[in-house]
Image 1 (cartoon, rainbow, N blue to C red):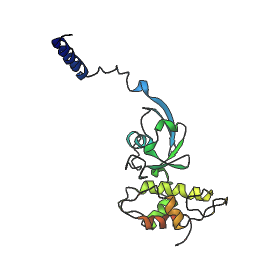
Image 2 (image 1 turned 90 degrees about the vertical axis):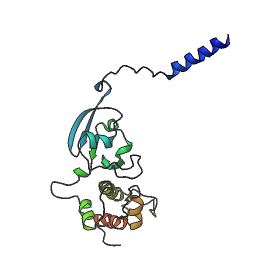
Image 3 (image 1 turned 90 degrees about the horizontal axis):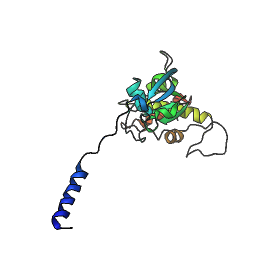
Image 4 (image 1 turned 180 degrees about the vertical axis):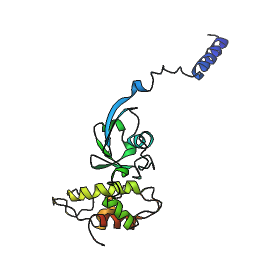
Length: 204
């Protein structure tokens, strides 16, 4: 191969690799959608969803439920905490289609009409928030925390993990169990006091 032919072939190869790849034919948004049914705050929703939509984005962008906050979007801050079948999860880390048939409760679904959930009332009474951005996730997490302790679920600081009985919610227990929810304002003492009050326990 001569030098001229070699250089010509290299230039042609470079031009070919720099051209944009042809886009695959689009099949339409609904062609790849997945039929999903969820019960959210007591109301059933049947939706055709892009399988990549997170539960958080479904709530905020599709169902106009902005109480669940988008914080880090990486499961590290807890602002997006909701209850799924009574258990707390980070809505930003789970796909909506994975919860077909599940019951989801957000901060909007805790109150009964004008009557606040006891945890919501305790957060107000104990001033358990400042800017309030993390508060919906804090409250949802606390609601689940109370059920977990009542059912005897242990934490990393529970002294007797073999005792199958409700766990006493000391301040240390509350702090450990709420550690997945970050408050950038630093309202932690009042948050602990709110959870303690909601549990029916007096001041420590």
